[in-house]
Image 1 (cartoon, rainbow, N blue to C red):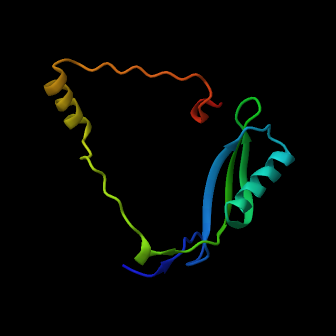
Image 2 (image 1 turned 45 degrees about the vertical axis):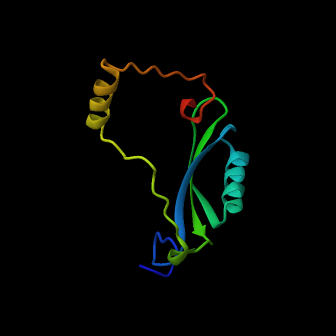
Length: 119
């Protein structure tokens, strides 16, 4: 496979992409303007806010649809392989049992500033 490629959403080569993100602003017209401006700065032409919803105090989730002006030359794409094998959950459990000799206890925590905790 070689050549220049560009995404398409409606018709081949139109460059249309969908992007979603959250901004730390209450949902209003100014927030939608900020989302449209951000999409333009990211290289999307004629970006449309197709979805906007408040997701908690002072945050808005957006879905934006617009045309990407960037192209990719497949001949210049370099793929970097990982230096370690990708293990299945069973393989991970078997290695833990073999090397640790006991069950592994994983504890997770969040202090509330991560994007996944918003809303």
